[in-house]
Image (cartoon, rainbow, N blue to C red; front, side, top):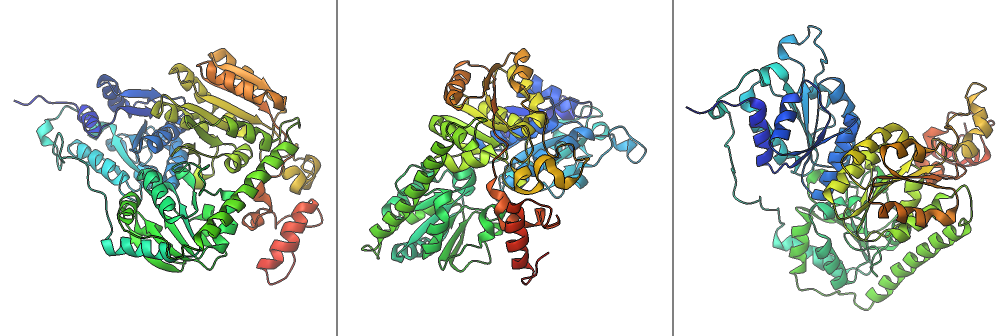
Length: 596
């Protein structure tokens, strides 16, 4: 007679059959059975202080390992604390499997403890979420979750386990429905190719172009297509720009690489652009580039094909496989005589951008409090190929993103379209577990460490030498005081209590030193590099408290994207930069010349 097993044990076996060896979460009665069996099965369980950190850690882990991250929490508040992290994973296209404890089914709508319904709450931020009320179906949904999370477009999937109906008593493993225990498939599924004619046509269009450009994104990272893309660019001599998670898939100091700061002009002059694995969204101006170029759209899923671009060719397939197919096509540039001039033009624009960055950094090198542009230059100089960087600072991360020349795929992890903060603590933990031999640096803001700083203790507890560099400018949204609201946020009235400012110069280093962290306090710009090197050399979780200036304008403020942030304020009360940019320029532009 087959030995009966607790459903939670069967669920953990199903997780292990999907290759799960690491999980991130926080205990609670409704998830306890699965958590306990995960421990007993030898899965590495990382117990965090807040469920949001568990999701961010699973997110960072998944992005680097290129497989679904797994996170868990108890029902009700535990699940709800995961929402922000799940949303970040969803908009970032990170594959994850989220396991939720659930209140008892028999107590539904009767005032049950921690009653909440994950399937309803998570329906807009997961590919799907299901409440498993029959234990015989649990393993089926676990297997399906891993498959669907890794089916383009990638994303998180949720499974909720009501404590009573799911784990009420041991069951016969043979009673499982729609599930074949053990390996059900030999090898990995094949990746989708395009038809040979389309691959050839793509090469012919690029070869015939006078001023071609490659713009790539996260799809290049997930498909591991960096080498193929570099080979194609070198063969046809095409400048290229790689964005988002794909940064570093081709080293950004490569002669054909152009940075984001040079891209706008290159795009405007290009006649053909290959979009490869780049999700064109808000971060890419929705593709509303000022250019006469035709586009080749190579995307892993039809959802990412932009319908508003003049498209010479559309290919929906795995970018890495298609690039291999393109490399197999024997073609040389038709417009060979004009190609060197175009490559030189792109290289000149790139060099001008790099020189402007270097010049901008030199101008603020001696400033104290420290300017984020100088900080970013120092961190960029230290960023070797074995360093993973997590961006979690509204101000400092923006400057670092401009300055950095990435050198490995997935080197830069950020919040993406979520634009949330506080994720860096957990994401740094996940990144370090995925890249044990890498140095991991998290560029934090004081807002982020205030939100998620409790999980620095988690990094300490598990012996993870992550360096948390806190750009401490003692405010939310640096520069808004001078840009818009006036001294002490006078526009907001006498009860504003200094508006968005925080307690001045908090010593975050001293907060975390008692935990056993290596700590540094930096006020002098000349001391930054040595402090970072000491932090890494310590072999400990480290917190660097760096006093930065709040008197710096974020590039976002002037843009048309930010217009609705300021239009409602009286033009005669706001500071001159806001009035001139938003009330006198942007408002009339969008309101038929009428001023507010």
